[in-house]
Image 1 (cartoon, chains in turn orange, brown):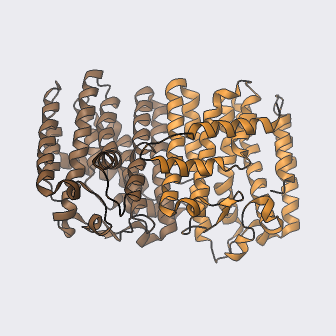
Image 2 (image 1 turned 60 degrees about the vertical axis):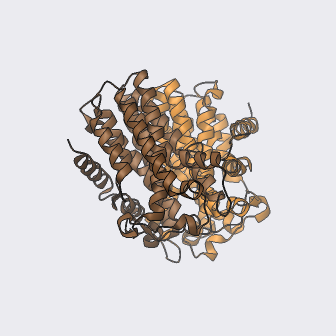
Length: 289
Length: 289
């Protein structure tokens, strides 16, 4: 099974989930569906599915969890793009949510997606029990006030000030790293992986998340706006501290390569077929979007 | 046990929950705690606790659920008050969240509170099992895109247009009614109430929620800004349809009284001591804030 096929399944699941929903609230669902269906690499759901597949072939059972995680990621982008936050007009090559639906609807669409993710996780927990509750705990913690949102607030407060290295690492490990790590850990948890593997996968997730963010910072400087589908050099304009502004491009490239090597080594310690996870890890290092 | 004491316990639980939290994300927790601790009637948690107490005296066991529900209510107020939404400067007699912390932090504080509510519900579900998962499902559905947020979007889209009666009822049953109903239903569910009672309580919750919103609309017109702690006559200024604009004050007062009577009757059909729930129901009718 190739990664592209998994991506298509996630796309399809999300598309169907929001298709033709709503009555008087139709506009809300349209706004939610707009950002969800606009695409994206689907890295988090794919990471979850690939990790799960190392232990259990029936990956379709956890498509709702993968979809829920992508909804959380999408809501965070909608709110992040708002004029009151990063004020972005372009996302994934298209107008941002508030540019299409207005600020109020975009706020509500974000709220709706976050809420919907938890609805899915609770619904599945009621039917399928403890592993799902555990996944719900993991996902909720990673997206919450000590997770992704913690990274967002530090990011916002960090405008126009020079950040120390520990705060920068904190910000990124929260803002991007948490959901990446949790994609992997919740996939393994849903598959019932043993403690030893969970420990290795946690470390793998942390390093992959960090590499992912460093690469994002690199692409914000050297990347092609058309390929990335978003405005570049925003961090510089907003005078934000990034890995590149702190370490420079060369060191960032080195860090990225080193972290990727460590990721591969960690996967080698798991007695499962991790070839697809490795493939994705290497893709994330080499990507230009 | 008087209702006032329950309110104090909810206040205390919420205060302690957010006390001294955060490191680099301290500002986020401050913003979350600000709106949570600023007070309010705590109607929803009290309704949950009183319903639970009809079946089980150990109401402290469900304080986390009551607190979670209040967090969801609070987040909805923070986002609702934003300049992009209702643009309110005053809430519960104090400056609104974005007036104190800025729009970006207010958006994140709202997101954080919604997320935290689900974290609590998942954590308790992991420890305490099925009743809590069911409560999580109920609460999530009532706050989500087919619940409270559905009401919000209809409210937003309804500015400067005359709403038909069915749409108005839809809006209010979603925007306010859903959380009120769910406070009651989830309290009963957590207590393990039987199906017959759940059916009666559902109807009670629907009628109480409707009465509550009609009363809110009345107070928006005739209420004292100081007592209410918020700007009045906003609906008129924003040219929004309300029960008062559609039915007039007299009919609204009649509707409120009739619904309250029906609520009391429904409670009379439950073979439990519902005296405190009745007391609260009558208070909600007579309140001037």
